[in-house]
Image (cartoon, rainbow, N blue to C red):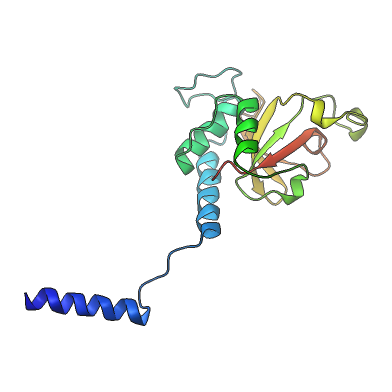
Length: 176
């Protein structure tokens, strides 16, 4: 009985004196989860691309299957199985940005169809009316982690000044 009392007094003193580590803030926790999502995604670099890949295998991915797997493993979140469903999910849980430079690491990025490599190929198109055809994970530093090509599989692409920038519709967090 004396040992229990001594432990209780010791624990109370530790709490009062602030010797226990503080819990992370919601923002810190969210950042940690986003980092885990990116790290899980990076584990699949080079995994072959296959349109309509099997959702029950990690041998190949299409873009939405890849993001779904990274979020399942890194955040414990099961996203919808297609890019348009994932876009709707992100819109329903929080704010989105049409400026990719305002995204945070781990945010999902949504793109319209490829029309060419130059900005002129997309001039005059209203992005709001364009169908989402691709999704990737923003890594920070102007890079997107995604898969879209049988030649590369899961890869990291630069955004600024490329067709990815011109095709970008909006992005946002899938982490609540």
